[in-house]
Length: 281
Image (cartoon, rainbow, N blue to C red; front, side):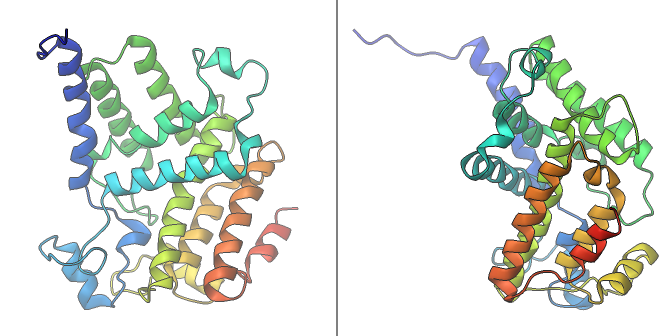
């Protein structure tokens, strides 16, 4: 006989954990996604958050959409590059008996939660990264605790975030393969999204009226104002760890994917990339 169903404490915990994840739909993306697909006037309309319209025509991508896209990348990497998910000796035990697919899925799910407290501050050379990271770590830890995650998963989530942020450092005890791969997935998501927009005729431009000096220098190097090229170049510049011999096999996968998108959409590879790689040999 089927039993009656009622609310439970476990179901309530699920609700408390679910709400903040969905609230990420209210956090608008900055950076490459916000650089204006239709020129300065349209970009200014996007920035005031008041324009409504068709998807990606008169609106900005949200953090939730971004996180969902990263989950797609994790899934497709597991299909086409399964070797990336083979764990080195000791990794399974170090991360509490969790496989790499779960760990990366967990990381990309929570990695923007801190922006519920800080917003998405553009990484254009003007923000205080140390202060931003500190605020985001505190917010994520508080979320995991209030949502009822077991202490082991709270520590795991905060630890994964620290490893992800440590990829910006030249050296550090928190640097790990998972942190590097998670960062590459995150940055790759914005680049691939802009490639798709470009294929849809919404190429956009980094050359808007309040462009930072950093972004302008990137345009000088790449020789164009494409959000794809300039966000891609910006990523490679601020993450020299990607060219460390320990992590190159993972970096090569993401560069291969990006070059493949370029060939498929533009009919040619990104010309400046291999010169940039050669400069790191």
